[in-house]
Image (cartoon, rainbow, N blue to C red; front, side, top):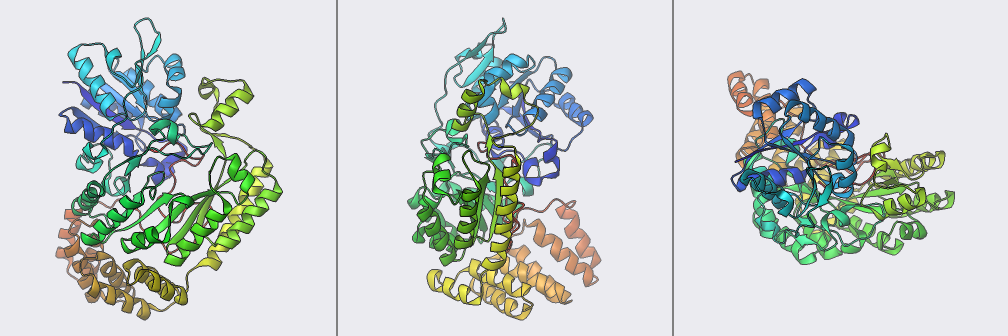
Length: 572
């Protein structure tokens, strides 16, 4: 049986960005699938490792196959890593997968003899068959979904692989968390529940990668994963990273009902489109713990929206924003600047739209070209180039309009978002109206409580949290909030009581354990605190958590940040 090492390395610039440093979700799925099939597989996040440490791991594991996850934004780092692998393990097969390898695999193979193959599209079944075929001594040319280099150096395609129809059959990445530099608290809050996107946005490669037909995981399968994340790792906040999380209304409501029935007590966010929501969906989502909705709005100019292939109208944007605020969720928006044909007038229309819809939070990015998009096809035709361009260009992303106009537009829209955030915060009367729409709701209580804390009314916040803790004794969030309030007012005994309750609700919660240990030390119970800290292990970067709706347009204050600063690559 052959051993497979699956690795990832972020870009040099991304080393300072927690959200680019984590492993792509897709790589976790491939690893879990290989392990579930009995394959020898190991996962490695090389993002923060030096070359000597990487060589140590390669020599210790001595894999027969090294699979590397490749996006446009990390392609240079990945190719450098492949060279290091080849020098360290001359006999190993090196396989690239991911969006960049899918869309420009042939030029990669042509320019980099150290690469043996590229997986096209989703990689679970394809890579497992590739490894099994090599182990048998057979020709991998019979395995669909590959680009291969033949003995004579020729590049050949094995044809497309069939999309995986039953996503429920795939094991969760978190079932196999072992690996080098794999931090479950940073890694597993990101959950993908579907594959495919029917939209036709010109700048997005997701439909080309996953297909335009959408395949869904069942609500029960997702709920099982969420229960595992909470029980095994103590996670209390997750981020659904589907392209359009709310696309299937029945599934969304079934999932939300299940989260309520199973008393998960999770908070979460998702990203979606303005034409795939309604009040019923939003109400169920908030009751089930949703805090933040991120919409790909892009522009307040209808001609620019049409130019981007958004398939949405300004009326739909305003309706979605109004419903989101009516239900009481944090309204986050993606915006794009530097679109061909965009002028000062269109930027002004987007500023005016921001004032009308009143988002709490947002980010503006320049329009960038990625392989696998219709924007790239247009750019390639106009520039008279081909996929080999990505071997020649010296930067990670290619902006459509790298000029002063785009920089100024980003600054203007960022300022508008910052101003909107100040003026758009929910007030006491808003929370009262939210309760009229959703009824008693943990998210409303937590959001209003945090707003009261910020307004200098900890007593009011404490009353809300105490009532929530009484109504939902299975929910750790009010206990964590109450513990922090007690800690801040120098009441360590009360703080310890609340943190102990949170630990009893979610025994695996590292955060609750650390907070309790701190409270115990304040009480002089040092040995108890030390025992908890020893069981938890060394401090780690914090997992994603919700924030109040205050925003900075420099980047999402809601979580998680988008992995690539250049634009939107296909999902991991």
